[in-house]
Every structure is written in C-alpha cells, then in structure tokens.
Amino acid sequence: MKTQKKISTIQEDIEQFAPTLATLKKTNPFKVPNNYFEELPTIVQKRCVELDNKHKTSVLHQLISVLNHQLSIPIAMLFILFYFGIKNIKIDKQNHLLSSNDISEYFDKEMINSIDENVLVEVIIESYQKTNSNKENINEDEIDFLIDNNIDINAIVNEF
Amino acid sequence: MIHYSDKEILDKFKNPDTRSYGFNLLTRKYQERLYWHIRKMVIHHDDANDVIQNMFIKVWKGLDNFREESELYTWLYRIATNESITFLKRKKTKFFIPITNIEKQLFSSLESDNLYEGDEIQTLLQKAILTLPPKQRLIFNMKFYEEMKYEEMSKILNTSVGALKASYHHAVKKIEKLLKDN
Image 1 (tube, each protein chain N blue to C red):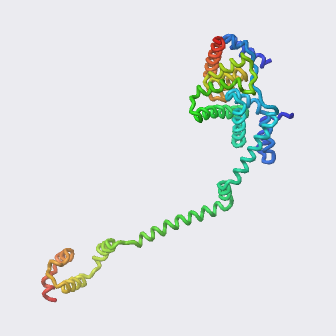
Image 2 (cartoon, rainbow over the protein chains, first blue to last red):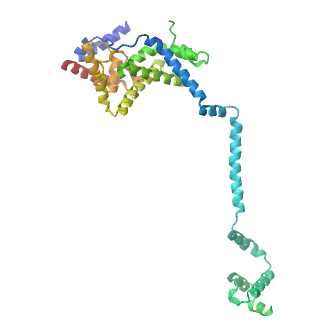
Image 3 (tube, rainbow over the protein chains, first blue to last red):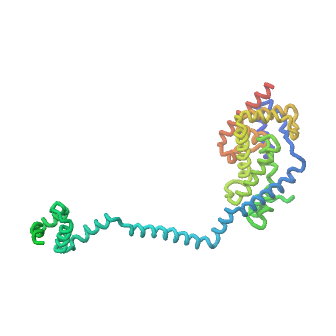
C-alpha cells in the first residue's frame, strides 16, 4: 500500500511536468547473456581468491609478514643499535682528528700559564743561538712576554 | 533460496571459516540491482560486466572496514556508482574524447548491440537519457527506473535532497523536450 502510494506520487510528478514521458512504460530494454547472474558470483569469488593468493606470495608481503612476526622487535633493536653504533664511531673519529692549529691553540690557552718562565728564556736563547741571527727573528709573543715580565732580552743575549 | 539479512551476511563474512560463503551470499543478494544500475550508466554489457566485477573486488577488500554506519546496500551502491563514473572518465581520457562525445558514441552503438532489445520509442528515450550529464543521468535513472527515495539517493550521492530534486526536475524537462521534438 505504501509502495503503491510512493509510485503514484512519482507518477503524478512526471505527469505534471512531462506528460509524454509519463505515457512511456518503464521497461528495461537491456538484456544479459544466458545464466549470467548464476555464474557471476562464482567468477567474482574466483578473482577474489586469486587476488588473495597473489597478495600472499608476493615478496613484499612475505617481508611484511616476517616483520610482523616475533622477529620484528629483535630486528628493530638490532637496527637501532647498529645505527647509533655507527653514529658514535663517527663522533669518536672526529674527536681524534685534531688539527695542528687546535693543538697549538690548546697549548696557548692551557699550557702557557703553567710554563716556567725560566724554561721559556732558555728556549728563546737556544733558538737564538741556533739561528745566529739578530733580535728581529724573535717571535712577537716572546717579546711581549719578556716585556710584561720586565726581562731585558739584551741582557740575556749578552750573558749567553 | 534462503534470504539472509545484512547482519547475518556480515557476520558470516567476518568469520574466517565462512568468509567466502558470506561473500557469495552478498553477491547473490545484490548483484542484479547493482548490475542494472551500472548497465544503465555504461550501456554495454561487456563494460557493465567489467565494472561490476571490479566493484565486487573492492567490496571483498573493503568489507572488513565497513563501519555499518550506513546500510550495506547504500555502501555497495555508492561503490558501484563511483566505479561507473570512473569507468566513463577513463574511457574519455583513454581515447582523448570529451565526455559529451562519449555519450554520442554510446548511443550510436546502442541499436547494433545484440544485448539491447528496445523498440523505437524505448531507443528514443535511451538516447534522450544519454544526452544528460553523467550525474544528472544517474539521478534520473535512480528516480525514474529504480524509484528510490530522495533521502536514500542523498546518502548514496552525498548530495542534498533539494539539489537532487532540482536535478531530477531539470532532467525530466530535458527528456520531455527531446521526446516531443522527435
């Protein structure tokens, strides 16, 4: 009763706006091959099963299934250890690769204060004697040190 | 044949032991309605056969994720609709043909199709329907032939009831004019 009422309402709509269309029967002019709907479910099922089997045997799926199994956590941990291990080795190498400038800077900053000035004077005299040259060859830093400490270079040179 | 409810079919599908049987039941229950919906859009049986098979394969892959927020038939219908539209778009891009000319191609081959048995008036009506844009054609078929409620169509096509009514009204007027002119 409800369906009949629904159909009559739709029909009334069409009769109002499209009287020519309203006179036409709603027949289906298309047809299907014999036994099409009997066979379709089987054909579809076969394709779905083939798809599933194909999916299971693919290499990627195998890899994913291995990762999804119990080995996944140990493999992940090994990967993490390997990654951070490589990273640390690189850092250590960097720490050992110090340039000569780094070394001289280090000595300049850290060691200069602990050097005995007498030792420094002896070194200067030795280097002066080796080169057998005049005062101009003496390093500026050395001169500054001597000046700061009120040491007369000429006196040292004359003495030795 | 025993008729199972959608819930029974889904329960059988979700059970690994009865998955294939559940899917078979679903296919048998809905195949005809879905086939004719697709056929009216793509016209030729071979194309409709391809589309419906692809559609059921998508259902097989996606049914586990079906959230049952909508009716099962609404969900299936939506997939069938999208597959039909995608098929027509692909046909257009494959042959670099504008979408309107696809429809011209379809009705020029209609009468020569051995799986078409419409009389002169029916052929005229089918050709008139083919002049509609794809979405309007969809709405017309769903309302005129399948006598669906606008609310149901709204869920399937994700379009408001008002827009659907307007679209159907325009479709009917266009077809009426073409029938009168011929």
